[in-house]
Image 1 (tube, helix red, strand yellow):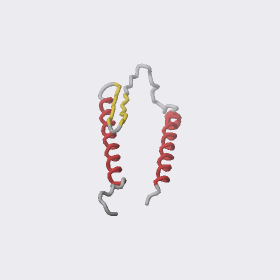
Image 2 (tube, helix red, strand yellow; image 1 turned 90 degrees about the vertical axis):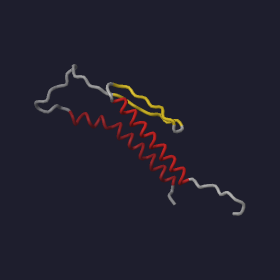
Image 3 (cartoon, rainbow, N blue to C red; image 1 turned 180 degrees about the vertical axis):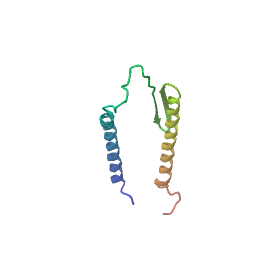
Image 4 (tube, rainbow, N blue to C red; image 1 turned 60 degrees about the vertical axis):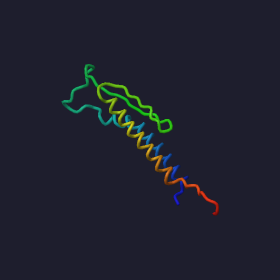
Length: 109
């Protein structure tokens, strides 16, 4: 049988490590892109960039999704968030279905 306490602590440690690495990535990426290569132009203030944000909050398997930005990016991010919410709901369903013991119904043990 799997030791669920060790598995839980390992997943918590992995999540904290991934969050720490994700926080350090911008600090690592900036020195790798600077200085500019010979012949490369400096960015100008007239250069326009677009971005967007999308997210999904799960409340008892009911997704509340949002998105903001330019173009089709927010719609795409909301669709991806809905798909991820459905995957989380399926994982929870199958986990509860197969790992939780079924109660015995009947008289004799």
